[in-house]
Figure 1: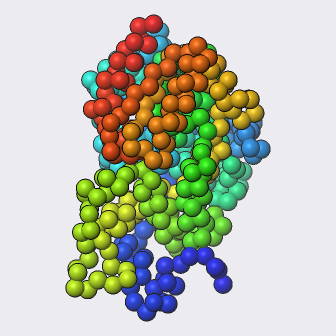
Figure 2: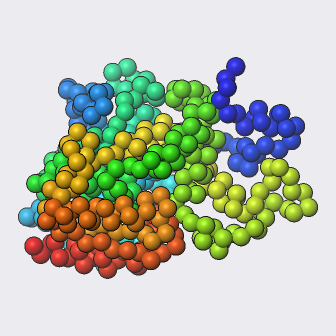
Length: 407
């Protein structure tokens, strides 16, 4: 008998409603995009056919597919390309409406577009789903070309550096020899920093937002609990659940709920929910809910519908492994070697990636003689502020891109 968490067992033991009853029936085994699905605005590039793509942690892939989207046009000089890197549960659909192939609208639609901070009338903007993701790029939910079976637990460990190496191959495919800028927040910011270190001649500027030089002990702690939420769901089946009638939806939903708490702040939650009840007060029991709980349930089930539990584990672990100094030496010295213009941004209320982490980036780059500007967003939105505070982000990003494009 499995010792993993099973909401049905909890319900049976209690003899009444359980936590799973707050979620609708029919949640998918995996929310991963599949080649039989509508591609929407995705385009695809495939690499490593006939040879292996070696991964930093020792694994390899016989074939790598990268899903990506573009906005705007590459100019004749090839000098106006901007790479946007997504965070943990993002994907290539950084801008645009929801619709066939895209269950949600673009995660940065207020920032990318004509006349917006990243102006697609001026710049050729690219966003790719990271290696190991689940929205078109090669990941655990895909079939292994060697045998046609889903990778599942066999998919190797991926690092931020592996993601960047795949993006560099995509840049070659698109004819981009040098990015005008590489920009992203959180896990996206980790990729941004690695671009500057791994490919300094291919980047003219970087914008690492709400990110860090290396994952902190607290960030690793939160990640560990999120991973355990998935791994202790009996339906996870060690990562090989794709042919089962149900997937680890409860574990993935719980991981998202934990993460959602770290992304926002008590100020925001109190302002929105206070102690309001979602369930009728006269029938409130152990598994009834407050509006705060209903909000978390909503975000949990939303992610289950568009994401894959194995990809969550893989990318979450890649964030833990992030350390700009790993195998290179002192972090301050590595950052100090970055000589291209840098704009980093902090959210005052960010508890997960607190402002001191971006201050450390700023100070190390400046100590090495580099050009780094630090912007503080006076927002109580927490870590999600880099995604939500579009008006605050507009002028710093727009002005910085305008400046580097004229250099």
